[in-house]
Length: 246
Image (tube, rainbow, N blue to C red; front, side, top):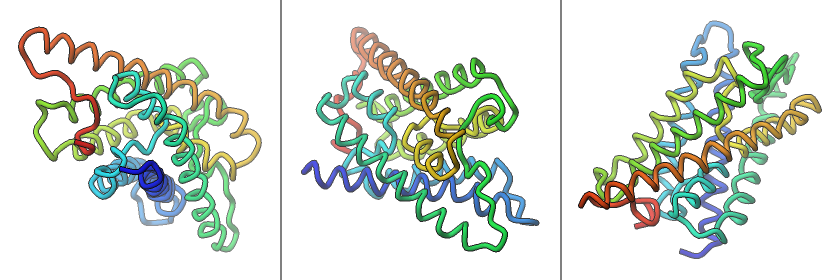
């Protein structure tokens, strides 16, 4: 598949993830009487990944997340030269989605962007959790996200079900970590809304690049080692690329 097509797929997938997930928080969760709460927001994020993994996953592999792209590289699923174009497309998609969401949200009288579905630590954490707590949360959550992605797309995994497992994993991650960091596990998703929320949120972006990428790389490496161990015991190893690319 041409790289241009793969970049478009990553742009669209990350746009939908940011627009759908962050949009549920900015527009729906705050709407009086609607009451979807953070459980509804968590489900929205999971559904965005699930739906777009089926829609454009066969084109690009359905990463929609720089931490996933780097994690899959660490797991030897993709070559290193795929990382820059994928990350550019993902960040562009998230920024475009945040811009569209801002235009929609600001159409309401008395609009106040507030946190605008951003991520944060300390005073910007929903529960005012410390920097250390937020760092650990994001590293651990992204680590296990990559374990699920790598395992569900392995050669010996049931065919066609990976997007469901990945979407549910992202939902679970949000249910756990929204009170702590408002859930990133995705540097692109963090960057888009932060640009519209103000300087304080932009100053904290470094954590939501560092922690997910570290967790993703460690998760991809751990999953690869698990796959190699399984292969040494006469079990099928992990595939060299996401199932949606095979």
